[in-house]
Image 1 (cartoon, rainbow, N blue to C red):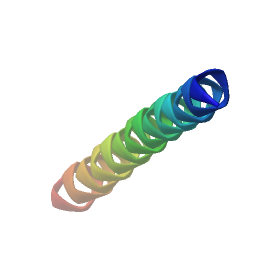
Image 2: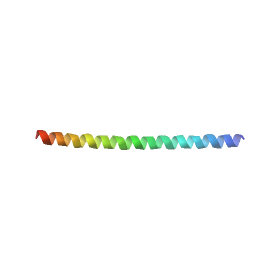
Image 3: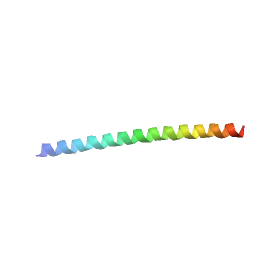
Image 4: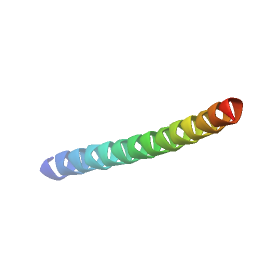
Length: 50
């Protein structure tokens, strides 16, 4: 029974690690998109002023 409990907690631990990893990837991708969007917006802004 103890072994089964360890396996269950271990599985939950792996799941949480996977979840956090995907969260990091989502944050990273969102940050890159936001950076590119602001960069493009800045280019358009400079083009309009120029």
